[in-house]
Image (cartoon, rainbow, N blue to C red; front, side):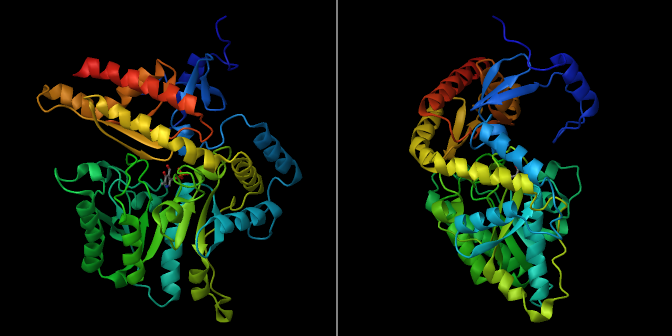
Length: 461
Ligand code: PLP
């Protein structure tokens, strides 16, 4: 039988209302999109459109759906907390969910990162970390240490400060940001190194980029260096071996705070609660997280700060000094209860171990896609992957342009027709499926990608 519609209203009408009234993130100011897919339901690793068609959710929401959709236990925890204590002022009160969750996060994070500031998502976590870095220096009598070092292709969010340290497409960005506060280090993608250059040489060059920026600006003007362990939205860029550790050492030697933005790499994406120390051997000064913290069921983020930093700026004589950063929804009890339940599920079901077990197969299937001529690079780690298209130089100009700009969309469309959603980014598509994905489902996903890329290649080459 044909699948039953999953929405009360006709999907076309919903899409029309959406086009008329909803401004989406990264909305185009060009032609109105009137045929956006209407998401209506989700279960496990699958998303259903309003007509009831089922898709594997390749991007796992937006890199956030760790435990899979449709968990009754999550719904119950959220409902129970909403009935018991739906809200309390984080200025005035403590409560069990936020205290328990902060303690849990302190246990999961490396080193002495034991102090947690709860936020509403990733952008506000990044904002909080950056504001803390400046506040910290002001209180140490170093108010001239204000600059942030960030990287080309890094993505840190959409609040003013988080957008200012975002290095994606910044030359084409018609939205204002605070450029005076930020210096960007060049692209670290090993795929872009010179032909014949070894990865070790590339690493030296990239660490030197940081060293040079510190020399040029002067360490006494720089507050912090912010880095995603793997640049996610920039195209799943895995740094060369040793890069992050050496950058962290340079920062430490120059009294520059190292902020690891683990909004994507946290909560099991690479098989560990956090990737900084477990995967890259780095103990940051501050870790920011969000997304997988609640598996995307409700919004929540956190900036987790080293006790050493807090101790340095605290004291009996500081009673009048306030960290004037706070959100109505900081430590929201319903969101913290959801995070605790999601973490409990990850623990009980051994999802970190599961990711470590299936990731080699996931990465092997990903690497295998490189045999298509139209694929220039494949890269990833854990359950993160990216396929980048490339155009042969002898192709006509408009073909090369189409591949450069639309390879991701073309593959996405060909995948969608076969029951898989991926996330297109110009000439790339990226994926980060729910952590519960089985080895068989990984095969299903890559069989579809393989066929879709084959089809796009047939049309384009
Ligand atoms: N940091 C990173 C690494 C991200 O990938 C994102 C979102 O994609 C953010 C920060 C911003 O998070 P949010 O969209 O929850 O504000």
